Amino acid sequence: MGDGEDDFTFATEKQRAVLELLANNRTSKEIAGALAVSEPAINRRIEVLRLRLGGITRHQLVRRYRNWRDRIALDAGSSVPCVENDDEFIQLGARAAFGKAGDGSDADETTARFRDSIAVRVDAPWAEEMPQPRVVPGMLDGSNAMLSRGAAIAIILLAILASLAVGLGVARALADIVNG
Image (cartoon, rainbow, N blue to C red; front, side, top):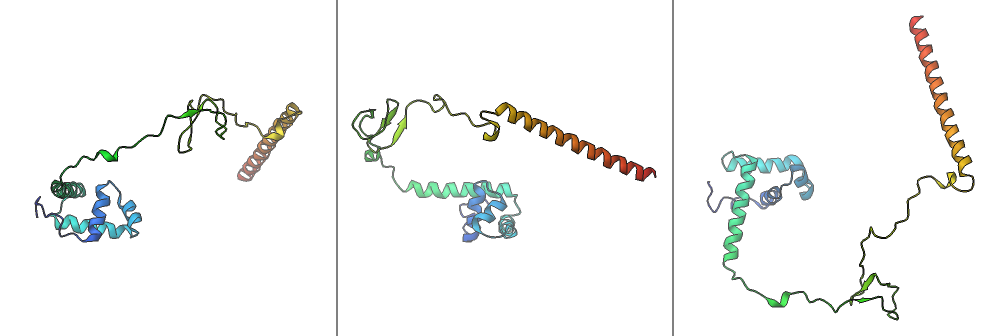
């Protein structure tokens, strides 16, 4: 066929669905997931289209489909005149009131209250002091923190030394067996 206007009129609905997703830079696996079909079925549909268009590459297939789709959209869009509509502008509400007493909210001077009741912070989120995350568990913190942490360090040290001794014992036993 060539680059004529009817390049993809022969394609079935399934093939067009695959081409549409392929034109959006999706992989075969993503297309298969989106269409709930197997990946080999997607690859077969693409291969049939490639062979039908003269054995072109997948990249060329996608480029031709995009060009064809754009031409069709341009032709369809050229028949509809461009109409400006001033009624579609978004109308903003009245100016926000900051921290009015008696409006039933717990707003302070940094919170804006709009007509549709959405609270918006005026200051940056990183400007206020955030509570620090707990680095150590509560068991190792408190009145006996120094003693608890020292005991935990000693227990961990003894566990490491014990595992080292067991490892050396196993290594010596294996060496005796090998030399044996």
